Image 1 (cartoon, rainbow, N blue to C red):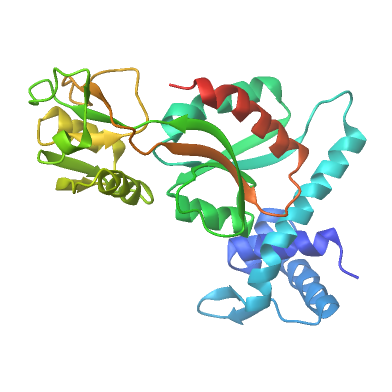
Image 2: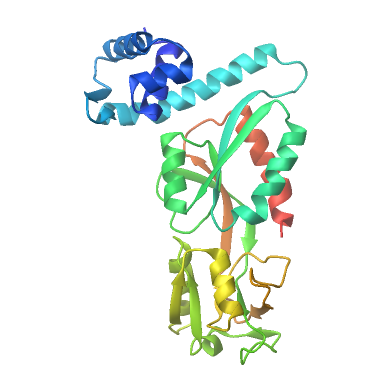
Length: 299
């Protein structure tokens, strides 16, 4: 019968890429790792790794299917162990969360600080990136819960809205529309635009313009949020954005102006996301509760 130690060895070997590296992470011999993985393969009746001298370990299709399930089982085993050891309502163990790259600077620092105060015995870590990479991380078990935008999420991801975001136009003070309290997308469309090129943001902004019956005049694409703001600060174009920094200066110290967009532009949802059908650990549920409290009021 398979056991948790076998699953731990399998997951560690998959992450490390070689039996030797896995043995160093778990502080056991390489032969012990190989034996545990071999026993797991025999219990399941299938091969989990292709062992190649030049490339190390490569997961078979069966191994790729097992990996997220094994991570989930190990996470819940840690939950069960913590319940048996804890006093009161304290949580223990490790939790990795994900956050969409452009939203992370606005919500993640406060979440990390507050969670550390409220759950000091939980080792909280994070990964950040575009939506497609974070969806992979969720489905592969590399993070348990994530904050993503709702647009274009793939099947197999369950979500819960935590904040509605309304787009605005960022521009330099010298922009012809900078003195307005609000502008329409039809007024913005002829002017050069700096497009934030991070999936799915680019498609969202293009869809927003097309829903208004106009096409944006994209001058530059930039994958960095702060580069977009810096280019706008140089008056090289305006930019539609969702997150609103509290400061009004670019990295170069140039003044920036936020102008509302009228005419009912497309809103977007920042959502909590996790693999559909997966029971979250108590640690992940606690992080989700914190997001519901903190994210709606974030800057």
